[in-house]
Structures are given as C-alpha cells and as structure tokens.
Amino acid sequence: MPRAVHVRAPAKVNLRLEVLGRRADGYHDLRMLMAPIAWYDEVVVEPLEGDGRVELAGPGAEVAPGEDNLCCRAARFFLERTGVRGGVRIQLTKRIPAGAGLGGGSSDAAATVHGLEQLFGRRLSGRDRTDTAFAVGADVPFFFAGGPAWVEGIGERVTPIPAADPVWLVVVWPGVFLSTARVFSGLNQGLTSPGPAPRIAQFNFQGIEGLLRNDLESPARAAEPAVGAALDALARAGARHRLMSGSGSAVFGLLRTEAEARTAAECLGGFPEAAGWRVRVVHTLPAP
Image 1 (tube, one colour):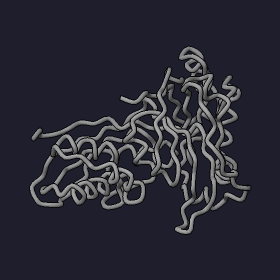
Image 2: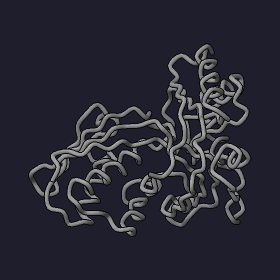
Image 3: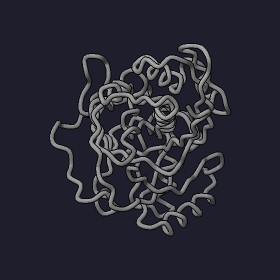
Image 4: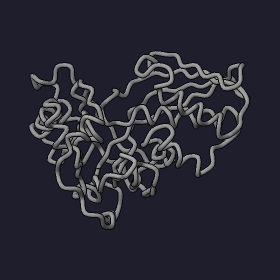
C-alpha cells in the first residue's frame, strides 16, 4: 500500500443548465452540459490506524469543517461501500472558490474517492458511483467521468461526450459566496419543456457556442448584483458568449483562441469593479 496518494481535483463549468421540473423529494430535475476545466484543488490521502477514522487537514479544511466537508462524506461512503478496514487522513488545498458554481467541493470528493481507490486497491461499483449524487454531492458522478458530459436528474445520470478540441474560457469569480438554495428559491420562471437534449456535432467552440443557457442566471442576478456586474464586464472585455456557471456566482466568457482569452482577461484587470475579483484563463479538459 502506498503511504500517500496525490490527486488533482479540477473545477467545472456548466455550458448549459436547464431546470426541467421539481421532484417529489424536493430536488429539481436538471439537464446540463458540463465540462471540467484546468483550475485545480489538491487532495492527498494517506492511511490511518483505526477502522472508519477520517481526519481532514490542510489549508482547505476550514471551508467546510468536519462532517460537512464533502471529502469526509466521500471517504466514509467509500469505506462503507467497499468494506475496507482502516482509516484515512485527507489533506486538502483549496484554490477553487466555494459558493461559485464551479463544483470545487464535489470535485474534491471525487478526487478523494480516486485517491482511496489507489490507496486501498478497491474500486466503487458503477452503482455506488451513481449513488454518490445522493449520498455525497450532486456533481460527484460527473467528476468520475473525467471529461465533458451531459448530466441529468439531480446529477446521477452522466453521458460522456468525446472532446474534439479544448475550449478557451475566461472565468470570473466576483468575490462573493452564492448559496444554491437561495438561487433556486428565486426561480419563478417557466420550466424547460422536456424533450431530447440538443445535439452536439463536436465538443469544440463551434459545437457549443449556440447551446449556452442557464435557467438559474436570472434569479442569481437578482440575488447578487455582482453576478450581473461580472457578466457585463466580460461583455466590455470582448467576450460575445457569456454565461454563469451552475448556481453562481462565477461567470465565464467563451473565446475562440487562447490569445483572445488572454486579451479579454487583461482588459478585465482594468475595470474598477474588478477589485477583489478572481480572473482565470482556462481551457476545458478531455476525458483521461
């Protein structure tokens, strides 16, 4: 058994998010086009003595301490479902902002499971990976896929999409935490009519530029003016295609090339409202 396993946990963006309806259990049925991006947290897992013992440390541990942290929930889920005897220590280094709609917590949880699978030589079953959407975090099954995907239900149904080319983005986090529950509580628009998912000829700029949509953007803008300010700043920086990711507060601009993305990011640095914002030039990641 290795002494420690290091795993990178990427952020994600929602290139499309449709709210299809409200379920009897209180969740909403969603249809989303999601892609991982090159912005990473770091997770290190190592074995501990003591069956079922889970410890969390590192500069990211304070984001959601103890049992509330998705890494801890993922580790306990893994130990229970695999029957592994022993404990684990998780070292978490956060770089992806929390409450941003970038999936950092769910990605950290998936990375924890990947690390534990390597550490103990046991893998979760496909069914167990699906169940993480309900037991750990809704976006966790997506991060197991490792590349762009259509994601449905509350996040448990994942259909990978082959990636033809990386897509360049400028991601802007306007420095505010936005609660998912708060955004959904403001959703008063008509729900998307069920039907087949839009077709994607290729996962590249041309294949996705016409698909951008987020049904949560309007209530998020109403709840937090910084979301609208960041989207407006992206427009002034030259990003024709702009969208909020997930339930916010991060937004992104879709650019044709890395050079265009870097030019837009440089423009953003000069806007007065950009004080305290975090701006990243990133690209989407293919499946490993």
